[in-house]
Length: 362
Image (cartoon, rainbow, N blue to C red):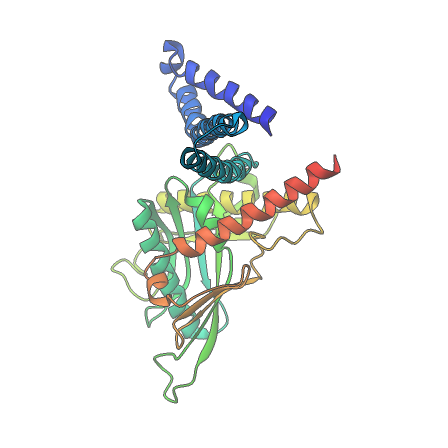
């Protein structure tokens, strides 16, 4: 690990020096790329500096203890400092190992978030609307921007399907854990007998693809226009501005009808299509590399039931890590950090264990 840290420090110093080069300052693209790398490496370097400071303190305390001849009170103080330093050293070593783990190449990307109602009819659509509210409130708290790409509503205010672009630092690195089937247990407003119903909603979180990531051949696209539809809106059924794009090689279909402009809808639909194709390509690569492994966290399997929201008990349970919180109201109001932080920690622990096992076999 120490040799790896030395290499990272050398790279950090190189990047820091390059950012002071006038030629690089004049090159916007190169400067932005280096600045992003600098920001990514900074937490690791700060942890390394702290680790080296603690190690030096431990070494000094150990030397004093080995010399002997200390007054009892002073020796007790030095022994305490040494013990606390050693504990801090072990904690920092763990932090450094986590920071050295390979990063998900998509973590810095924006997100295409898709929410679809599943089993449960209108109740599922109403819960899909509740999930969209939850994510929009979480995004607002994080300072992320949400851009509506497509929305298909029901007459009662539910959501059959919604596509949103979420833009902001760290959006994918956190929201990627939300992909999967979300289950709700509650008494619907339309239920006269007070019976609890179980419904499902599917959430898909995809890294937003750039044009350079996925090249679309116009010959592979079938583009149709149609009139907007939905539960309301001033321009519904008045103009043929809605766009349906079919990707012929895969049969993938994307619709967008949020904008009045046909061209804007087409642009948004192609953005979603690129992101779906990129996600499919990356998932296929992941499956080919590790077809037999089923990790506890972050598999991205959309058929997997990942979470249950139980309204009668005010309980939310994430089945992947066995986490249960009796904070359903606050979670539905966008307080997702406690859940996501636990998922991130579990994912890091799993990957760290796998890395250590790999080192042990070398």
